[in-house]
Image (cartoon, rainbow, N blue to C red):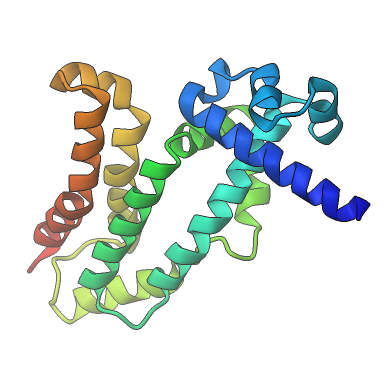
Length: 203
């Protein structure tokens, strides 16, 4: 019973933390707010997670391990390159709309703690892009797409998907849109990005 209660409490903490991080971001979140959201006292929260950073890493890892297997399945499927680009973009953008703190967290961790990123990469569900790279090379050799290094194509896909979330405050200012309109733009990008990439490499 005690073990079950601990698992339930930890799950409650992680859900509460996710809600606070989504609303206020890593810097704006406070441990007391998370404890209040979870319906527990701050001492119990610190018993499970000694610091906000450790709690944020746990929330991030849980979310990332929901996304990673989806992306891995897409990249290693038998589908055509065009379908993979569409499915990858759609899944990634849809997921990040629900977990908007993820891209900025990755950037912050790359600068602050490369060790955490290395641990993430070593996870068994971390996407393997080798089959995707081989498929790009084969499409280039067969004249189905314009010549491009697989690495560059993958970077282009990731950049077009990630940047609007990382730079959202700046882009909202340039575009003069509110949060709701910007969210709608991000939803539209699931189609816009994949079409842009597919048209750009079409032979």
